[in-house]
Image (cartoon, rainbow, N blue to C red; front, side, top):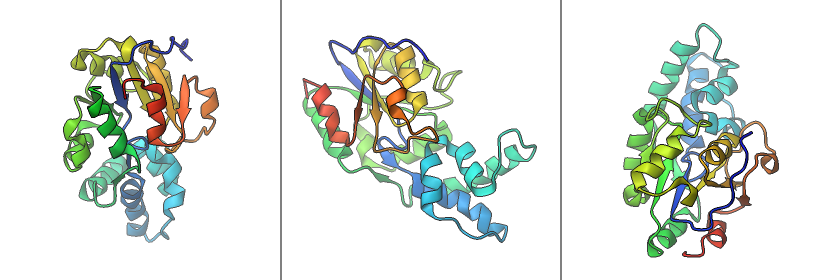
Amino acid sequence: MAEMPPFPSRVSAVLFDLDGTLVDSAPDLGAAADKMRTDRGLPSLALADYRPMAGAGARGMLAVALGMAPDHPDFPALREEFFVNYEACIHDRTIVFDGVEALIERLAQAGLPWGVVTNKATRFSVPLTEAIPLFRTSGVLVSGDTTPHAKPHPAPLLEAASRLGVPPEECLYVGDDERDIVAGNAAGMGTVAALYGYLGQHKEPELWGAHCAIKFPLDLLQWLPRA
């Protein structure tokens, strides 16, 4: 784990993970994976089975739906099948988490730019965010394939800070997965664990090394004096 940088003495921008932090996309991700089961004559699984792994994208969904690991020879073909299914329902059931719209409004009122850094590929992140009005005020979208490295590497976060014209040490990064916190710390940012999100397989966010944690989106305001 990267050494934790100091919490920013000045916060000039806020960056967010996407799935599990700003939007609840688990219903659409789960539906895309579950279709693969029913297409094969397998019984449908409950959304609760898919939700914890929604932040892991295709890897997580295929593990739940078919017990498929990335090293399986059929994984690439099945991943593409999942992708096609997901594209067909990408914003059918996805919603913004309660409190996120109010939080973004407060950031705007305070003149704090915000943006998104996600491991979701551009193929999916762009159509999803374009379909949701919330993202019209976002200053930057860095996807999983925008830079040569995805999170937990700090490159995507550094790219987002650069595009916003804000020093990394004046940014907060909010995410619901350990990879988010590792990436944020490595980028020299303040890090916030979103406890209302998916949290992944290792649900011990107190061990991730985040500067702070929030149970609801609006809890972030206590760490943003300007807002």
